[in-house]
Amino acid sequence: MIEATGLTKHYGKTVAVDDLSFTVAPGRVTGFLGPNGAGKSTTMRMVLGLDRPTRGKVLIDGKTYHELHRPLGTVGALLDAKWVHPNRSARAHLLWLARSNGIPARRVDEVLELVGLTQVAKRRAGGFSLGMAQRLGIAGALLGDPKVLLFDEPVNGLDPEGIQWIRQFMHRLADQGRTVFVSSHLLSEMAQTAQDLIVIGRGRLIAQTSTERFIQDATEDAVKVRSPQLDRLRALLPGDARVTDGDGSLVVHGVEPARIGELAASNGITLHELSPQRGSLEEAFIQLTKESVEYHAHD
Ligand SMILES: Nc1ncnc2c1ncn2[C@@H]1O[C@H](COP(=O)(O)OP(=O)(O)OP(=O)(O)O)[C@@H](O)[C@H]1O
Image 1 (cartoon, helix red, strand yellow):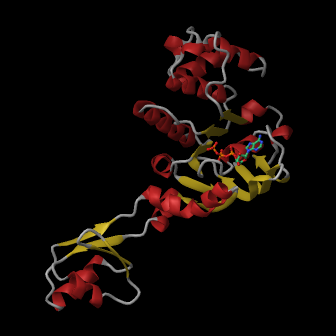
Image 2 (image 1 turned 90 degrees about the vertical axis):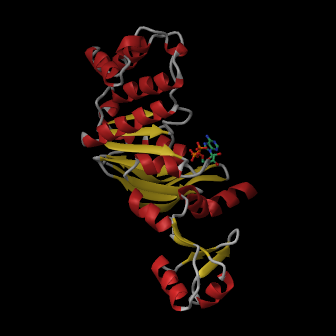
Image 3 (image 1 turned 90 degrees about the horizontal axis):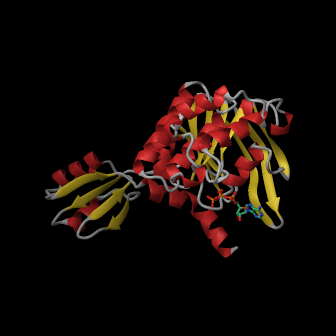
């Protein structure tokens, strides 16, 4: 469990994180979503004690990072996959990490197996593809068998197979009862990965909700209508309907498709199309975080 209360970070005049309060529950994959510069990495660094909050606090299982007795046994993180000594083998890198944290060497072979790197464990980590480097980073995060895991943009730059692997792996970790907190700037990515979402913009909380709920609220359904008597149909729509003109069609928000069909039928209007449209996820997200991006552009 991660609990942030009034978490705030200033860098000089820049407010990177602004009075952020949220909870990340165990047994689920929680997405940490926000446009570039929203404050995701800064928040994760504060969780991990790498940055000191200007105000507020963030606790891992009730303690600040610095109060943890065995930090790696409580929380593991993948912040930057390329953070390895390029000439060390994957195994040597993990052994070094394990030794400096009092973790037995046999755990290194376990985590290599878990992430599927056993076959390449003796190869130079500097020559690894991004996908392999991510796996090595995840192996490092798992060394202490922690209950809480943080991943900062773990699928950035990966091919579809690598993305799929990371997604499934995160779900497996959550199914084992762990707290999995993963950041991304892409809602479409998070929609496929996370069960819960914490959405931020300009360092502030925009929403904390289930992914399903967020998508439902953010994407409003609309109906596309095509008819040779469009103008007549438009005049018959209820006053609170919002209508946008398409290419020889109307897109109607706020009226059920059935109601539009009935209106057309009872007024003798021919319909050539009556199709429900699902709002685009990315559009909804951009709309929701627009204010923060605009603010940023004027900075
Ligand atoms: N060490 C630092 N010194 C000064 N400003 C910083 C520092 N780290 C972050 N910032 C600023 O704080 C804000 C939040 O940055 P942060 O990297 O946390 O955002 P992010 O959501 O992780 O974005 P991205 O997806 O681009 O990494 C930005 O305006 C950034 O320029």
